[in-house]
Amino acid sequence: MGKIFYVFYLSLLIGFLLAIISFQSFWLEMRVNIGLLIPVYTAVFYAAFYSVMKRVEHINGKHKLFAFGSLLASSAASLMLLGPERIKVVPAAIVREGLNLVHVKYSYINLAICVFLLAGLIIILTQRVDHENK
Image (cartoon, rainbow, N blue to C red; front, top):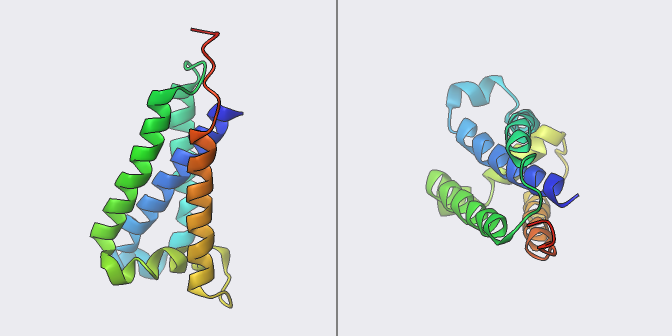
């Protein structure tokens, strides 16, 4: 269960980042619902990460540090791409567009995104490290 959640979390994190990068393309943004690209990107990276993680028996400290570093790096990259003002709206707009939730405020969607990302990181960081299989 731990590996599957770890792989899903990292894949979704990369899916969000790639959606933000895709949003920067005016041509693509006008023709494609960028929010629908998040599951596509997530599925591609899930398959890639899962094939690598099949050989790993358990999540250890290096994996936890990588998850934390990935969240920090993707947050920094998103902030650099969007800037301090647009970061408050664009991620929520992408999710809202993808889920077709036009009546939900951006602040609520941003809160849900933050809760998901932080809760996922806490779950990964608090997983018990199994040393028996080493």
